[in-house]
Image (cartoon, rainbow, N blue to C red; front, top):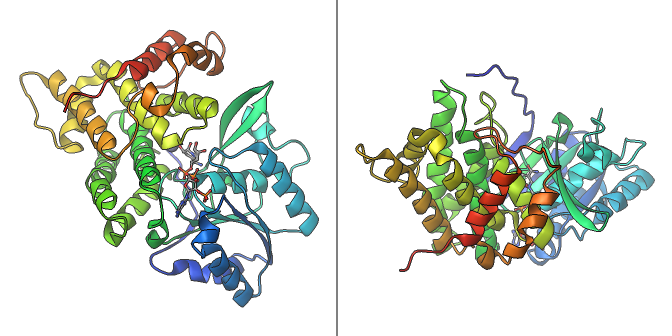
Length: 398
Ligand code: NZQ
Ligand code: ZN
């Protein structure tokens, strides 16, 4: 087990109706004027935004609003948010939405007290010394931004959309309000994308070269098994509270780094996916459903027994003691079947990606000597082969 520091001081409120206390929670954390940041229409249509506003009114917290965050959030709206927060002396950014809204809020919060361009924090040239506090009312279980130290933003640079992440302690939400009922209105496709993203956050940590990590291996498998079992339930009944609740808490636990603090982590699949969602503006979880099994197929020989263990302990496959490699491959097939059954794309065509773009995807990911991943360190040729596997995959005939 590696040495580690684990610090996630988020104040969580979980369960039915908790969003009605948003105002009180803002007061508890010292907010006097907040920026309510939200996405397209879902929070308006469901009445959630109005309820949050009423809760702030009741608690005597002033607010200004900025909606319009798009999935794969854009830098332009971040600049707008920074401007509003400065002009209006906002002291807390309240995200009402999913990962895109929360990340846009985090970027605004980083930018407000900083004299330079907030994008510096995404280019690796600066580390934020401070940020406004961010709170969230989560509406989709997926990205885990409600508990993570990450923030991912899209920006057009020289005519190309760049999707960049930043990982800082200042990105950790001050509070997160999680009512599983708020996810009842999700389109089935978004529910499935979210479940896939949650699983991938664990997969990025589970496939590691660090030894003697039994405690976190068991946690990883528990979170993965939970999503494997609950996903078909929410697809069948979107109002299954218990299944929604398990998936929502899994979203947080999968990515607040409880499961990975003690180990080397991979993240190649995520970085390959970020190039897909930058180029095609696809849902992050959908891109992962295409690229992660391709990555697994490419690297499983590095540690066949770990992949066999995943197959047995997570996907419920039978162990073939004569031929563990078959078990490893059966686990990858079972994962694709789970995601395919939930309506996720499994290859480039189904995602809307083009094989002809593979050169550009490989070029965008980094310079000629760029390396990806840790479980297996990949060079650019490896990356190309993984995209090719993802493009070539065909679903088995029913
Ligand atoms: O914009 P609205 O109308 O709200 O619609 C959204 C959006 O179209 C809709 N939606 C959300 N909650 C809903 C709902 N529709 C009906 N009912 C509800 N309750 O769902 C769509 C997707 O929302 P989005 O916020 O984009 O989803 P998600 O949470 O998957 O976030 C994806 C973003 O997070 C980044 C991804 O790259 C992507 O940009 N990630 C952030 C991470 C982090 N900060 O830790 C880690 C992840 O690996 C990921 O990279
Ligand atoms: Zn993700």
